Image: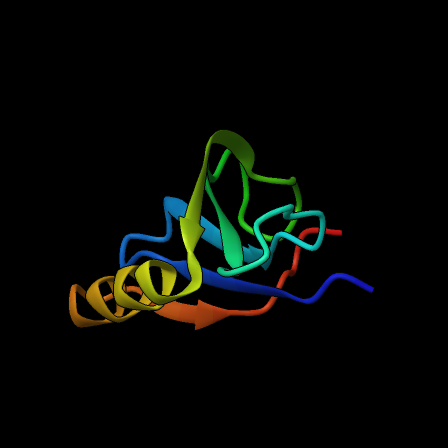
Amino acid sequence: MNKEHWLINSRRSRVKRFTINKKNKDKFFEYMFVDTGKIVGVLGKETPAMQMREELKIEKAREEWKKLISQGWRVTPEVWL
């Protein structure tokens, strides 16, 4: 199972999904995918439209998470299945 961690902005219009890249070929560093999406329609009813994917080293992804939290983003469960 691929564990995902989600953040949502204060306006509830954008989301970020953080997942570990389990198929990484780098033997020295671990990487995470950070997907950015836009909420379309009613929150919880429709899947966000994912618009961008970045691959970051784990430490850089942690820094990004902390930065977003300091900007008002909040942890959210995946509610749009």
